Image (cartoon, rainbow, N blue to C red):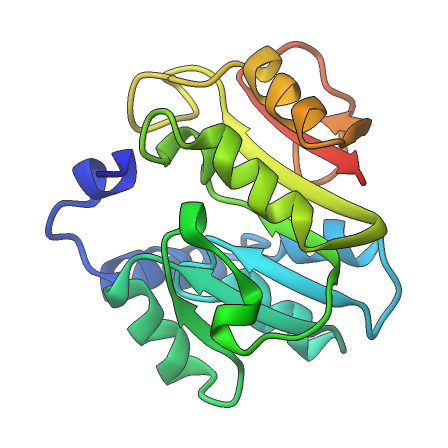
Length: 201
């Protein structure tokens, strides 16, 4: 069982989406992840949103002209995503079992994004497998972008994954670190409790 399942409990995708809607109404920019990714690959690039949740990031990227696919394990999250953007491809699947061919998804991806603490909330012990599966769908030169908390202030559960652990997973999958930032605004990483990492295949 994933740590996300432990955390979410009976919380619904509607609750999660409502929180971001409130932030947007207050004037907060809720599209930092999409803006970050758009600066890395050209319009029209193929993007996999791994752990897409309610689709906030992917829907914005699609609006910007990217060819997107979303995968998530949480049915309530995906229900919101499908309601908000029924024309986009959404798949319910554990990332540790992700095989595009089984879903009828052909070709590779130019960028895979795993935002929203995806890696620390995976089922313990599956991190390497998930990185390997996501790496395998990247085209040569493709990017894996992941942002997650490293301490209790930035993560709803006790941290389970260090940056060193994550880098080791990426190295084992043949990925090379090409950038690390403290925020989705691309502020330089300063050793703090949140990191956005960019690895290249």
